[in-house]
Length: 111
Image (cartoon, rainbow, N blue to C red):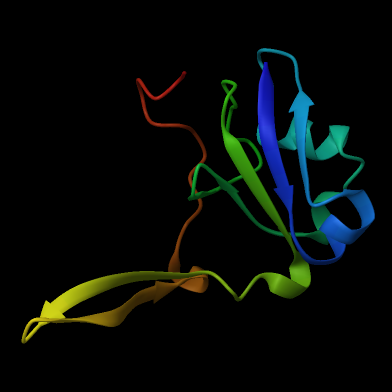
């Protein structure tokens, strides 16, 4: 299976910002990290298809994986836009420190 990988900050400078990687069918995010030659200690948040995940999250192929270094771990903020008097306004919802990463994909979401 193949996944699209985007590395940010120093990780992207060292390994290349965007690449497609072939993995075994039963791979998890941790296998992807290992295949890239990265250690868990240098990782900040990891996202699969825009969702904050744990390294144990399984991959199914076709996903977009975004990996940030530790020095970029505070950049993620969940936001939304609400209409107020006919205008949209930015409304921060929660920061990453209060979000628990997902361990597995939702049922039925495998491609």
